[in-house]
Image 1 (tube, rainbow, N blue to C red):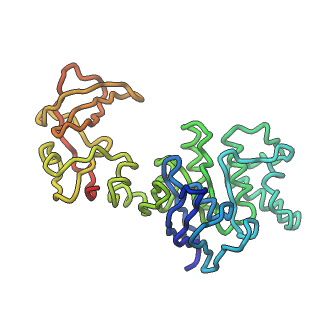
Image 2 (tube, helix red, strand yellow; image 1 turned 90 degrees about the horizontal axis):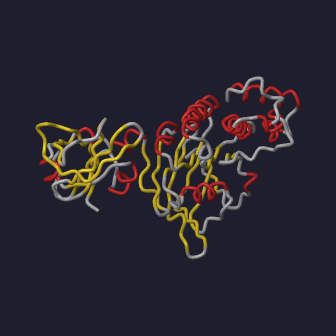
Image 3 (cartoon, helix red, strand yellow; image 1 turned 60 degrees about the vertical axis):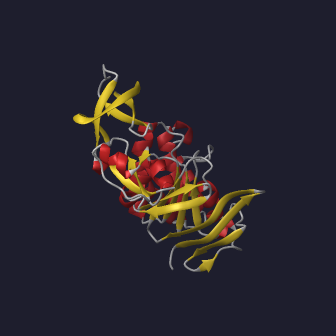
Length: 325
């Protein structure tokens, strides 16, 4: 197979198994995001692919060639990190051209000009990096990573140091740059919105295992397990009987219904549930209610409820069915 293939990958730190028997493939031109909480193994897997961490088992291959004995600098992979790691003594164009020292001067200039345009910094070439904002610095770091035309670009939480508004904007910049240049990329993040907006496929990791890899829409609507659904924001998980009592979908005994973030709706004809708490969050009120099986759940409303109970129903479109356990 062309592109990246990872087979049975394992990374250990002493007795700790950080990556546990992971299989992964990234096709040429594809962007795959590894999504997981801190400590899930996503960055360790990325470092194993780069060669920065030795695999204790398994293989990393490119187009069928085993890279086990190939050093980091000869794998043809690029890397972009959270802090950008720009060289303060070089200008913007000097940073971007850093990996092009073997190219003729004219080709270096043309490549730098091309990438400044790709990342939206045309005319910034002579600037000092100390004069850049955080978002601009990350654009330069991206351009520098793309400059040598890596056959695979590895990105490890490159936007996590930016504030939310800037991060949301930079996701679009990243996606456009990667698609414009046709770059194959493996992207690590803990942010679900970031992964879904950027990647062609998203893999969810937990405790070193890759639980599921699918296109964002498939992953969201058809999680393979309760663990994947819970990470994506579904929950609580109720039996088909409880779901039906709330007006939601049925489920057989071997499956549960996962309630989505906005699936419980106020309904004057719905089931009466006792209130647990109410709190404001980002312009809305999160109303905690107690389900018929005594689990807590949340209803999102524009304002607080004056009573001790709330009538609700369950929107089937906001639910998923997952196996028990």
